[in-house]
Image (cartoon, rainbow, N blue to C red):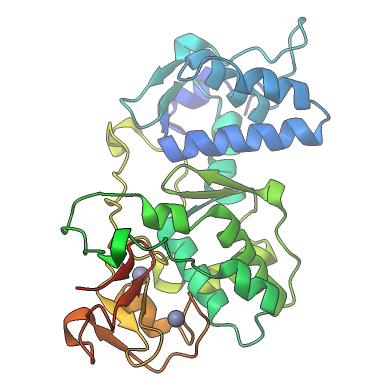
Length: 326
Ligand SMILES: [Zn+2]
Ligand SMILES: [Zn+2]
């Protein structure tokens, strides 16, 4: 194979002429670009790229060339990957043409194995696992604690109409900080090193990007906790394999489970005790303790079956809505 990545290899069908770097994978490219720049003492170059106009092929092309180890140009900046070979793939990524076989391999490996996108749903499983640790330190307990919204006026909270996005409560309450604390609590319990703040990047509403590769002992320990919720990482894709729009985030309502950001809050934990409501039934079943007050779980009950029934004297303490009295 030619060291420059010959056209001959491309034409022989080894790799497709054009590939798509999906929306999530574009975020991986920027995250990895920042990491590589930092490691090489080129922080200023990362800043230069990050300040370029959003949504431009040139900005992405520069970040891409950092990953492809293309040297900086005469002006000290990374020259962008040829803009003529970059084209937005609808709203779900960038189509890149004419990668050499080496570049294709390097990029595919970086996206699929070296970087780790953790969806909110996956992160929620780690969060639940941390809350379940018998060895959870008091400090971590308080940092992982879900705090209730202040009561609505007069304590007259009503459950939101199903499917109506009234707030982004679950997204606000499952913060990146909580997830990092949860990950490190799990890792400490497994005797592994911790994840530093520079290794995790919050990615909008849909998850987190970690610069931790596939066989890293920490990633393996966390993957174990994600269990069935684990989704494969995507590498480079062919254009026909990628939708023009990124997958939609599930709507986030007052009823969205704060642990998995997927199920709905329909039950309270500890019906005869704290009556806190913050998670879906699946997540409540996994927890040994209440995530809002740490009381040991004695059980759970759907709102309409609570005894005593929900009333002003016996409210449900809802994480997103405050006290719900009817
Ligand atoms: Zn849940
Ligand atoms: Zn509680």
